[in-house]
Image (cartoon, rainbow, N blue to C red; front, side, top):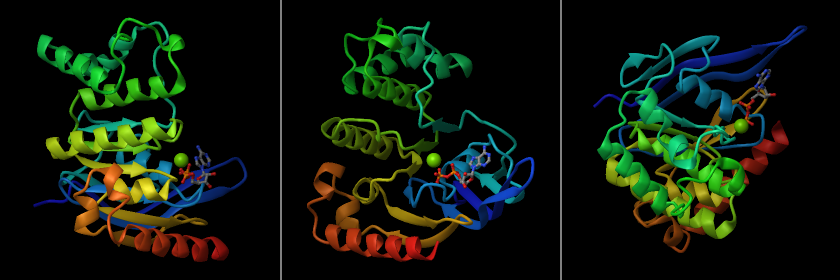
Amino acid sequence: MLPVVQLKGVTHAYLGDREASLAVEDLNLNVEQGEFVSLVGPSGCGKTTLLSIIAGLLQPSQGEVFVNGEPIMGPSPEVGYMLQQDYLFPWRSILDNAILGLELTGNLTEESRKRTLELLREMGLEGKEHAFPNQLSGGMRQRVALVRTLATNPGLLLLDEPFSALDYQIKLQLEDLVSETLRSRGTTAILVTHDLSEAIAVSSSVILLQRNPGKIRKVFSVPEQIRSAPPLFARDQPGFSELFHEIWKEMEIAGRES
Ligand code: ADP
Ligand code: MG
């Protein structure tokens, strides 16, 4: 089967007034159907740049990007992208924000609206459907943005630190919920996170990037017993802390070199 995402020799430089800065250089990556991949690495190593390229929001300076075998020409309903900030519309209710993607893609039906309400409930937002974003906490708004991204049922989901602003307990619950939702739908996902234990707990492989310029340092495969456990329990599986320390050590070495 074709990989869902293929990056071939992707290089991106941001052009400033006086200089160009190389954000990512010669990146090659395949993500297979149903895989859940995490990107970790220091701030500035190109994680957000990479997601924006895969989302079709940013044209790389060099290289090729394919989603489901097709070259990327721009944003597509097949690809859901959740940004670091929630970008909810303040004048729309929570439900109206959550169904926005369905509306824009012409997929709003009684059925899809019901499924969205269900998702809001699962995310602990029951009773908030008719509230407005400024009446919700940051963590709640982030969950609304997550529902909005999941509501259109994209085949490929790109998540840029979706859990980083949340309280620890809610974060663990959401990791479980998202990972279970994606697993049952067979969604392919790429998650950016600075939380290494989260990366190991939710994904099938962890990709460590290094900076100046952004490159893949090493790819770590998550063992089956950790991968198949729900994220909350994955942390207790044998091999978890060994893998954590292995990646941690590599991050430290990379940090000293950059
Ligand atoms: P990360 O998400 O891993 O923190 P980014 O992809 O945001 O990294 O950034 C990678 C590099 O590109 C950094 O050096 C950053 O300063 C630079 N960069 C990111 N966005 C822009 C931009 N819009 N204009 C200029 N430089 C940028
Ligand atoms: Mg970023």
